[in-house]
Amino acid sequence: MPIRIDRMEDLAAQDGPLHLALGVFDGVHVGHQAVIGRAVAAAKREGGKSFVVTFEPHPIRVIAAEKAPNSLLATLEEKAAIVRGLGVDGLLVIHFDKDFARMEAVDFVRNLAQGNVSSVAVGEDWRFGNKRLGDVEILRAMGREVGFSLEAVAPVMWDGERISSTRIRQAIRDGNFDAVEKMLGRRYEVSGMVVEGRKLGRELGFPTANIHLGDLQVPKDGVWVVKVDGKFHGVANLGMRPTVGGNERLLEVHIPGFSGDLYKKIIRVEFERFLRAEIKFDSVESLRQQIARDVAQAAECK
Image 1 (spheres, rainbow, N blue to C red):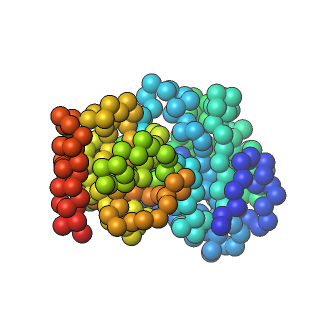
Image 2 (image 1 turned 180 degrees about the vertical axis):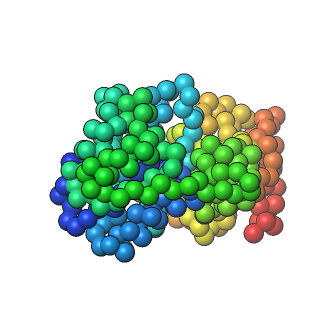
Image 3 (image 1 turned 90 degrees about the vertical axis):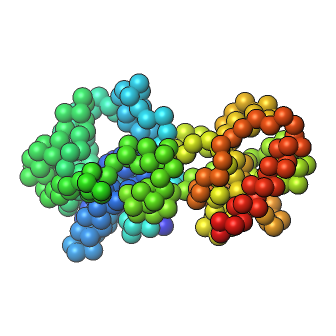
């Protein structure tokens, strides 16, 4: 399990030389993995520990909220789990607020250098510090001053364009999960805690696990074939549930044949295939009949 720290000064307490990968890393896509991989490789090659340095909340939501994406590709907990799988030794999560946004670029680097920083890896176009005036050239100059080497990693390309979180979010909205997988380096999943619902699904004979998705990026509303926790196949409705007067977006997942208790558990849901749009039925019985058809169709997709 990677070390988790929340203050830059805590780096000073870490033994051995440190190899840092700096970035927001929303989704930890293939391009982000290239940056993180440089820090992990440096730690293996030179000794010491690799650390991912990231920020919470997403800086753009503080600096220019009107330009911020409405949805993100991963929660902080999901991000931590993904970087753990990349072999990282530690995670520094810096709380990003307006005071932090005003920190000058050189001061940010000096604060990081309170630890025994041996190398830093960033994307070649990464910007940081007050008014985003910090760039690779400043990092390189600061490295010479305080004693770390810099790796500026070029963007990773796919299908003729650079991989970016923005591009992945659009692919999810489009339901193009093959492209999403290529750019993320894994199948896209959303996760959330199962919450108590109105139990209407149970009354209709199709009990569901209900999940509030917060600000995670999801595809278009409708009925989807899904996989839960990487092993259970099911059918899910994503949307507002107009037939029963729903007033908030919810993901309702039905797993045929499942009898366990998922309440208050965190589950992971992968969208596999779109079945139909969400519609308002003229009666609950009509809804029940359609759900039965959806479940049967989803079973054919396994």
